[in-house]
Image (cartoon, rainbow, N blue to C red; front, side, top):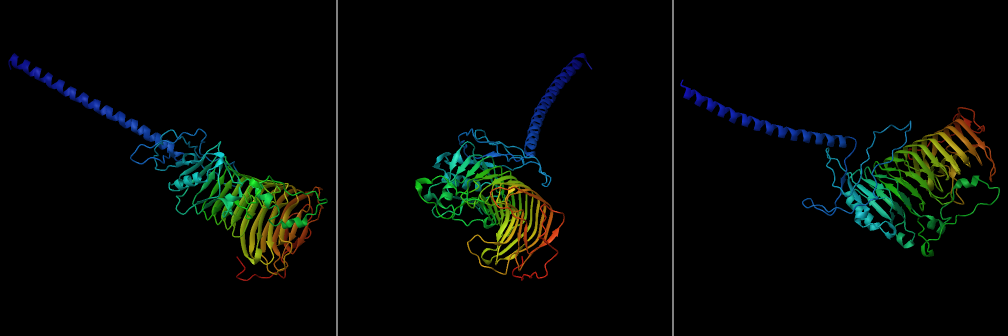
Length: 536
């Protein structure tokens, strides 16, 4: 090979090598850029996964924009709080729950995208025209907000803090609503005191019906401003029949003197419940305060899997018929860590209730925790599996009570009152199968039967009578057990009485203070058997 040929071959080899090297570097550069993008995407995805692992990622709602247009952001509300339930205190008898993250509602920022597809859309009443000044009628704004909330699954209706909303009677209903709606209440809702606002609608003020998984939570207040009703009808409701057992040493009791209603006009005769749930599955109420209801404060009717905790209920001790929590035809109910002060029963358990568990509740003033009254107007009543334990009852008419009317049918079975601390309670333990809230009542042979009623560790002080067991002649109380009852008297403005028993059969498992010698050991010999129609 000549020198010229060798030199030409060398030049060609160098040119070919340079071209190949340039292409290899470009390929590596392109690969490196693509790899960096892939790592960035994976890191972002991991962050999204981590963020959505501890709780549901929340979306903000823009109700004025379409899917193909840029949504218009509603005005920012600096008073809108983080949306999270209050963490309940730990209790031995309540299974622990996983921690709940604290999602935040920020109207001025776009919603984050949820990795797992779950989200919560927020609907603020201020964005639907509510003023929150305590004077403007915000009823229509609440109705519009609820209508929008119903259409979005796992949505949240926001009633923000530092606002007072004047709202008339509203029915938050629906079969058409999506499940798991949250009603976030951090502001104050007040009821109208003008009689014209209640014309035709007076049984409920705020009603939630036929909903699944509805949650009412927050730090807000529901104020029924019931004093105008109490003034117009101070004695419209029948008095508690247990007052017949209390004989004051002097007549120092005075009727309530509430404030005057608007324009001095009388309110309708039917007093509304402040907050009622009807026909709902899994309703939850937590954190809020309900006060001064015209009648019952919180009611559950025909509901399943009810949860109430960390709730405060308050009204004056002389406010008529203002029950704290009223249960009727409801099953699987858990109530705990709540403070109840009212003018009637702190908790009232009516017919159709079963599997009710109440614990760590503070009750007083009021009329105690009651099962009944049952069997009124010859009706059939069925109550079973009721547990009330670890409860503090103070400055109350009654402690734990079961009350039934003559002439009724059905039964109360499987009741436990355990670890009850009473302080200056007039009648700590009561069974009254001759209940009558009228001036005259006729005698009947039929009755709601009582079986398996257990009292244990009930201690404290009383001011009238420690124990009152008045059972039916035809259907005596059976399987009544008493253990570790220690009740000491405090002389106040009432007469003091010894324990009383009538047709009450069961067992004294331990000595009691004072001795309950009137309880008959064993079972009655003449106990009537209820017909198939009467039994539950």
